[in-house]
Image (tube, rainbow, N blue to C red):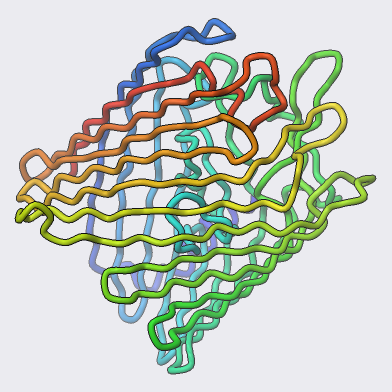
Length: 404
């Protein structure tokens, strides 16, 4: 209802400017995902999917409208076959200010491996487990831009529940998730209006952002039914204060994201507050081996104050993580790049490896490769790591994209 009202309101408000210039672009993709081991719940070992994301950009005098829907069809998982309106956003710009009304995506953060401070949009978890894909969020966003920095105010009417793979999907949790009966701490449930504010500025070689959010948590907790063995998402009402900072010093990027979150728990929990952070650096070696290739060396540490996540019926141990990687940029005519990564939990022997790479084909096509390997997970300890559900989900994925 909130999405429909915003769309209708924007269209009615745009009627005086129907003669604006329109730009159209789109990307269509075909994706093959192959798993190297048999699944615990009998899912398929391979899947094929197609997606389409068109974009219309209407330019008016000092204003614009962006419309970006997203559609995916998946052969393996019916839950991954879905549609979302990523953006339906009207923007108007004045002298030192801008106003955005509609459905939009806003990104906060500087770290490579985890974006703790990025809280405006809900994660589209059926797209990928890396948390990079987001659902469109209804919002009213006002920005003041002055020499002292940028102040951004957000009113967020309506809540988007997180998407999850279905029972036939891979890279899913151990128990099936009941997405039809989500629980909320707020009596307004998904009709609540959340609020956020962020201030960002530059100080010498530092890019700094400070933000405060009050509203429904984008991260759910889970209630496990002892009868159906299904997990039902529970969304508490939280307060989150965050800091993100990045320093650019020659070939070095120094990065920090930190949050203090309160009230993240069930009604009777005694400890709902915690601190989490991710910090590290990226150092770029230019022209290695006397070639055009650059290598960015990445090292980050993820800290979480909590020992466990969940409650008595369903809880998982939380471990800090050490992550390293190398980003290879070949600087060739086909924009070839490759990112290799490794991560290890500090409280156990769990490790995971990742590969992401892409190469342009001609002027309007691209081939992408992505893979994950999970090792060191104890088969007999389901609560020992958040990665337990993925222990047999090593995969390789190829994606072919066509741009219009």
